[in-house]
Image 1 (cartoon, rainbow, N blue to C red):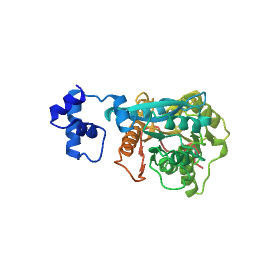
Image 2 (image 1 turned 30 degrees about the horizontal axis):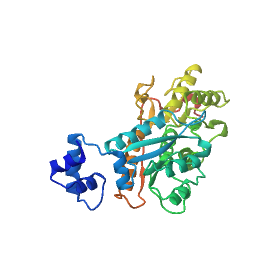
Image 3 (image 1 turned 90 degrees about the vertical axis):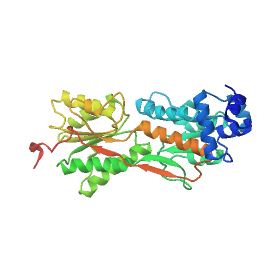
Length: 344
């Protein structure tokens, strides 16, 4: 079905139908919904080239994918990307993913933003010192941030998870269970989410007049190997931790392996809490000892990011709305009281 046939079916002019499909504000909501419903029912798809010429819009959203040996292009990014893609498809937008060197994200961002292939961008993997908000403002392209900058010249649109609260609550639980020697296996602490998680853990410890032993604090990649290596090092200390907190369930797999090799049982000899709870290929309840976790869905965050970015492109979100989600701490068998032998 072409535009002329769809217009005749609806009894509307081709101009009105085209404007409804492209989100022009002068078309009222009832007419726009009627046109969109008819387009879905008939399988109508506008000609992308004609649409681009008529509206100046590419009908696409974009984001950078970090690549390279140290890049975090793992299942975490895949989950987020799946959510973005689901919404883009539902809204009839293309998704443009550009591989980028994490050490030179600015060049990749400029190339993607100025190439005329996207109408808006999602910024992710926010770092402690990050100049990209200034860059995006200068480019004048709609954008939304997944995460938060530590300093910015003015408000900007973002969606983030309260990572500080997540690790604060996790450490507070461990303290309530009597643990004082707690190992922290964090993500890369040049990234904002990991800095905030560390800060939340430190806040909980400081409220009890405690601090993290530097020998029990590790900033590393979120891989199984890194988790095992860190946990093995922690348990080799003269005064090993009775509990560990890690940034990812992937790391937690390595922690479980290290504990098994050391002859320790998770939940009895050493407690374990992990960030992540909603990963399709790795379920916390399927661990040998079900894993206590913080619950926050990357896929859901990706869906919401894409939804808001498309709203900004269409002029439906015009303020710098800042959205902060609170993770849920889900208790399972991997956390228990400090072993009696450690009390003294």
